[in-house]
Length: 192
Image 1 (cartoon, helix red, strand yellow):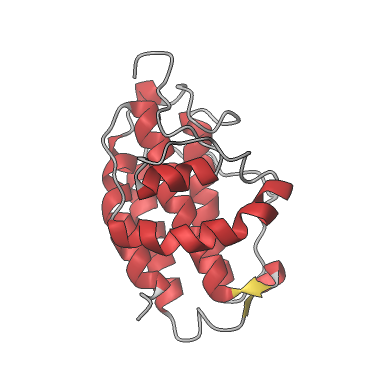
Image 2: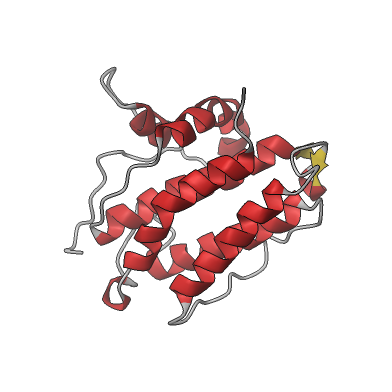
């Protein structure tokens, strides 16, 4: 049986929240594996993603094009509250059924996109700030097929980069990161 998106999000949150809480103010200007974002920008982007995917779970209209809110000192508490709301939104009856908002995509696929953003951007932030991070095997397994299926569209939308080459000995999560265009061995060029 396939796990519900809300269950997978809850599992992913248990791994992500320690990373989000572990980001120090003196790390906000550090580079991340997402070349277009420093740590602060990626935190703001992830917060925007989390709130927009709540709206999509309720079949509402999201606005990923709006400027991301700039988070303040209360970011840890706000992330915890919004991730809990994201889990609740995807646990609601019907959240995984039908199509999700203006994306006009199967709701379960959109839920998997939320899961992927949480897992992959947590890795980005962990790498940028020198923290440990390994998502649960169930999360990685759930994302594997979805990311492979979404990759061509994600690349045309510039959400994923070109696949990064990895060896046959790559872990499932390293392969997932490579599918998004990330180098699983990425390290910051400055000290975290």
